[in-house]
Image (cartoon, rainbow, N blue to C red; front, side, top):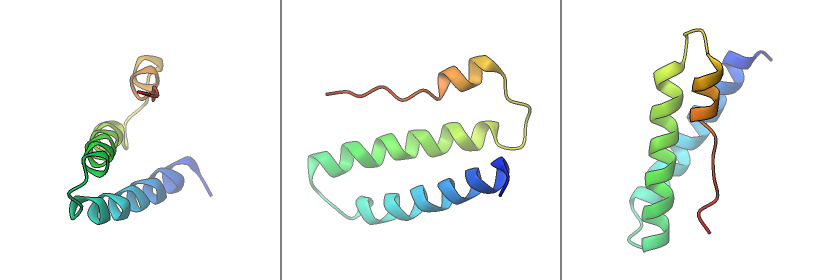
Length: 65
């Protein structure tokens, strides 16, 4: 399994979680859904292009609690 396949798998899994959370009205679920949507958008923006160190740093996740 190469890196592109792993990224595709992650995007698929995140999309499934996102579709499940979008139907929820809980504030926590909405916040999680927004974070997932942001992550998907960031991954799709660089998918299939040469990745720079700055792009990798931009994808870093920081806990908000």
